[in-house]
Length: 262
Image 1 (tube, rainbow, N blue to C red):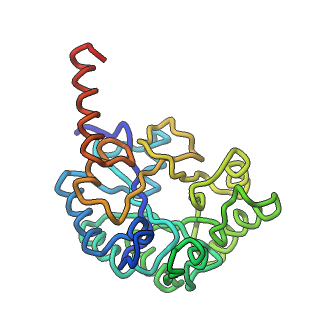
Image 2 (cartoon, rainbow, N blue to C red; image 1 turned 45 degrees about the vertical axis):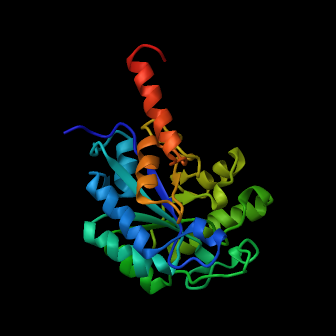
């Protein structure tokens, strides 16, 4: 059996009903999410846990050639209601990054970003505990989902160290972090490391190879408007561009390389 040389990480957010164009980017319908998982399974992709991904990166574990990681940011209740049942059907694990100070509340950080000011429920402790028993691992996404690059040093420590401390109090062994909004520089990566996190996930697209910077792990942004065909193109290309023209360009380049023209 061929083994993985590079692993894509998919990034989802909310699963549920979207009520405007802004939400349709970050929210996928339950039906479409189920279609995504079915398309991946039919194409022989195999979801792996975040710990297996980390072990693969360290050379301690081999994974199937079409291994991939499913991640969810923010901790929306809709993942519990709609995505988790689908993932259990495939016995697929996933990782979720929680906003530790808002567990059981709503995504208040979106109020000024969403044109209609809509906010949605986040997972509570009971739901997190249930999911942790079957398939999900939970890690940090800051305390309050603030742009870390806009904070002073004291605030940055609070959002990183405070996040880890709060999740530890909930008996959530959080070892990994995802940068809110994907925004970070060397200062923020250093602070995440200093807070005790072992790795961090960005929103920079691309495949992850074993030599990927452990505090800059790449992820592919999966939108609520992505069809299953677009998803498969994204995961195959390691790109956020799932358009047919990107797909055609990729295979044209591969053909040129084989013909010695590239």
